[in-house]
Length: 308
Figure 1 (cartoon, one colour):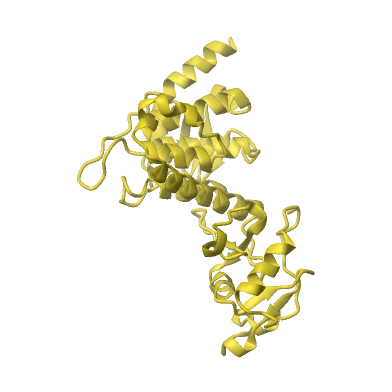
Figure 2 (figure 1 turned 90 degrees about the vertical axis):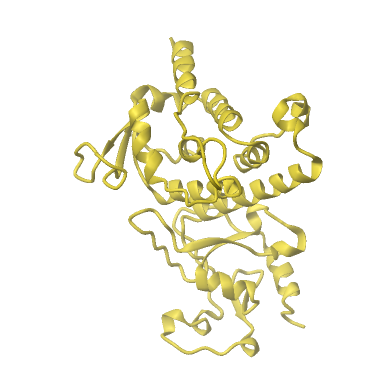
């Protein structure tokens, strides 16, 4: 029975009715397979609590991060509302308004309830792997495939070079794709595992559509070693991220904030100024166990000349 269900739902994944691009867009539209990859990734991370789901911050973060990997082929804005609504016509879920009436348009679709069979299969690691590999191989171009595999933490086996999609990639193009995939994975893991909370201010602000105020910031500057180790990351709001990258503040080994006051002047409300954070501990949301590696704080200090 289970084998029949796996075959049935993998078959559905091969028939997503993805539109064909025109003009600047080429190939199959990535919206539907991207959304399904995001849900599979959330299931892998244990972030799907039940059959009912909305456009949460975790889903939006993944859709934007993985969507950036196809921006060269599909340069127009990827609107998650479209696959969120239209995949209901292919049996993956039902779409509802906020009042739980049947959704009639992408604009009115806010809640989805997965088909029970599909949701149950998401709990199976073997199905998740087969589904992700199928989606990536069927709907994406060679560079995108490599980048997506890396971003999802899946192995890119060089033995696959005998396959047509790998044969078209030279080593330089493949390495560029790997780097993009690592960066996308870094962004998703850092922001989601820090629960969308700024480590400087403690602020967590999410829009009704799942957008978050924070970015994934590299502690050791990315330009130095392209270090996408998750322990080299902090979730920071936009202002804090910019000021950190400019070397206006740093973090001591004990996790306390240190400033470089000689490098800046500021005016404005206390909650928006940097000076009040001097000496404070970094702030992490309740339940967050991930912590940055202190050695990267030292490398950030050295790069920006703290203590020189």
